[in-house]
Image (cartoon, rainbow, N blue to C red; front, side, top):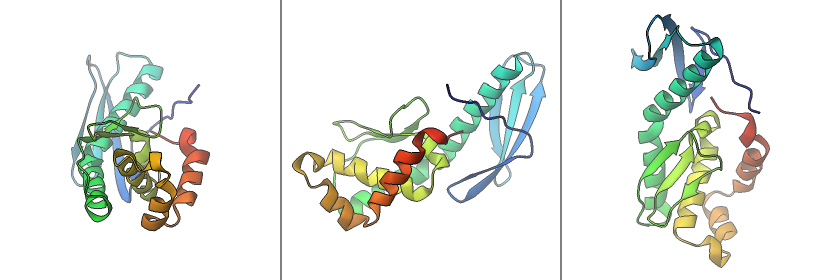
Length: 173
């Protein structure tokens, strides 16, 4: 079972070279919410009517969804730039999903879904996965061209693949 991280007010979280300051307040209300204010401050307003364990799950969920929404435009730009530079494919929607258990999901219509936990990985790992997703859309992997394309686009891709294989289940919000 996954060990739930505990977060405290004042704690910093760094995602892709952006440092976010967490401000957590507990209030006597039924629901919990989050919002950004200032430059990179994330205010979490958590219901004090739920158990400590449930509060921790809500905090983690709000951090995940808030930070993913903040970085989604950046992810879309990464995919768009890589596609324009190397592939010229028709792509669909690009998104994060906190429920995704694998490293990515690529659909026939060009949609690309990456797990939100990748925000906790080095950015170059996400870039490597975006290239891999684009190769899958172009169906080059089936024709044995994957390694050659990866080598051409990202010569050190094997290091990224190894890093992800060794660390995928050990990081996240």
